Each structure stands twice: as C-alpha cells, then as structure tokens.
Length: 367
Image 1 (cartoon, helix red, strand yellow):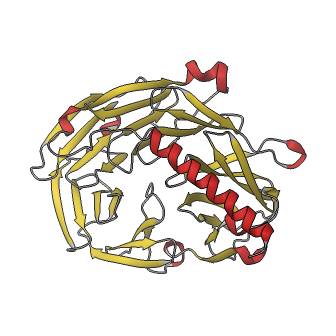
Image 2: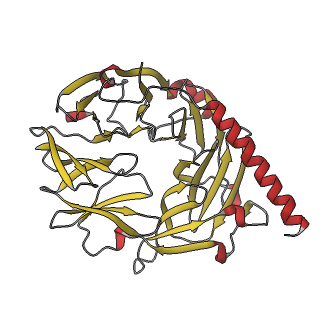
Image 3: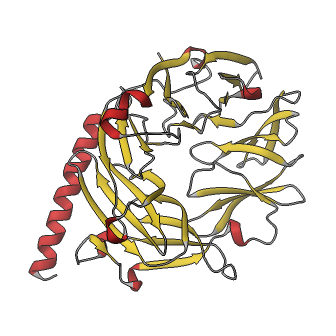
C-alpha cells in the first residue's frame, strides 16, 4: 500500500472508531417488550411537528425510520430535507442534497448505518439520484451521484450500501445494487462511482415467476412473497435467493417478520384470523380469531411472544396479543392525528414502538 492510500485508510479507521464510541455513548437502556411485560407498554413521549416548524420547516408526513434502539429517528420535510431527532423530542441534525443547478432533490428513502451515528439516504431528481452519508454528530455529509433515470425504491446499509431499484426501461427487470464507498479513493462529494465499484443483479422476489404477491413493509434485506398455491418464501435481497419456505392455509393480506426472520405473523385478506408461522419448523399457528377486524400495522417482538396491532379497525389505539394464550390486551390510544398513521415501526431491539402521522410521532416503551 502506498503512502497516500495508507494515510486515507488511517483517516477512515480513525473516523469509524470515533463514530463507534459516540454511538455507544448514546445507546439507551430500555426494557425489551416480552410476554411478561407488554401490558405495561405505553406512550412515554411525543414529538409534535408544529413545535419543530420554526427550526426545521414543515413536516407533513409521519413517515420515519429508526436506529436499532429507537433513540434516533429520521424524517423528511416538505422541502426535501432529512431531519434527525432523538427520542426526547430534540432536533439532532438536518441536511439536504442539492441537485442540478442547486435545486432541491426529493428524499426517497433513509436508513441508519448499523453501529454508527450515520444515516444513509437516497435522493432523486429527473435523470439522476444521489446516495448521501450524514454523520449526525459531527454534521458532515458525503454523497455520490448516479446519472440514470432508474428509480431507487429502498436503501439499507450494513457497511456496504444496498438499493433495490426500478428501471426506467420497462423491458428491464427490477434489480439490486450494492457498493462500498470506502473503496473509492477520489472526492466523496457529488462524484460518480466507477462502474467496477457498483454491482447489480436481478431482484429475487421481483423476478420470481411463482410470486403472486409480495408482502409490504418488510424491512430489507428480507422480503416475503406468496405463490398462488399458498407457498410463502422468505428472500435474502443481498443474494437474490430464497432461504426459507412454508405452506400457508390462506393468502396473507398483511404481515411482519421478527427481527431475525424466523417468525412471520400475518392475517388473511378478509381478516378472519391472526397467525404466526415458524419458518424453522414450518408450523403455522392460528393465534386468534379476528372476525373481520382490519389491522393495517402488524408488528412482532424479537422473541415472537407478542404481536402488536396499531390502528385496528381504523381506530386510534394500540393492542397486543399474547402469542401463547391468544389473549388480547388493549394498551391505549396513540396521539391525536387528523388521518390514519403513515408509518408504525418497532425498533430492532424490540424496546421502542413509534407511531407516526401528520401531526407528529408517538413513542411507546415498557416502563
């Protein structure tokens, strides 16, 4: 390794070490939601977008994403800026990516880089999109440009950056793209990555001839599809392969995976019953009869012992089922909204439930 590359490597290692220490210092100790304590899950704080307006501008949509422990939350403003807040309601950082002629770009998706105080975001404009890396503790941004009309749909980052992309040319199939910016030695501001650093391959679930439907709101790198003969498949988007299958008794209308992907909770389209599938054993259990109660947001804790439902029957409250007994617990109303929630998420460590709508966020924990 020459002196220039050695110096660059040392700088990268130093930055990563600082990021890791800072991230560890911000992590919070919270109770993991379990079957023993889920009845104590309740709202602990709220973020009102109107209170942030003078500082960050207008936020009209309750879409958001979380870091692993729910202590940091990323949202987007009406003018195309990404806002990072904390779980106490403080604004931590804000940034945007300029497009051609310094016109604003639109935020397409945002994800937290695993293990670091960094958000990775994808921004679009006509004929190009941008991948940005923002350290929200030192307020520094790097971003790369992709000169293509293809549309990135979702982004995730585990040290490498991954995208699922829809091509502008309808004759081409949807694809997954991966790259690692740390391998690039040039300028890291508005540069186009060399082709040899960007790798593409067809999206497995979107190019499967047996897939009849794909379940929404499944976080990458996992994906769920179901065939017409009721075979459910769990995909790994990072290699385009199926890593688990199981038969179902009905066609799912909605569902969610546990963090490790082993369990899949789902309801059928008419909401006759709530189920839990164990991909390891292949056994699908009916947890409770729903009698037509519509559940737009289903969540599953990490041990698959509690299923959480939000906005059930389009009513503004949170409920949960004990998987072992099927018992239903009404946990309470979430914040006042002028429409249904835009997003509901459970943090990866199963400590934090967040409900987002047009008026703000409601943060729930066990205490």
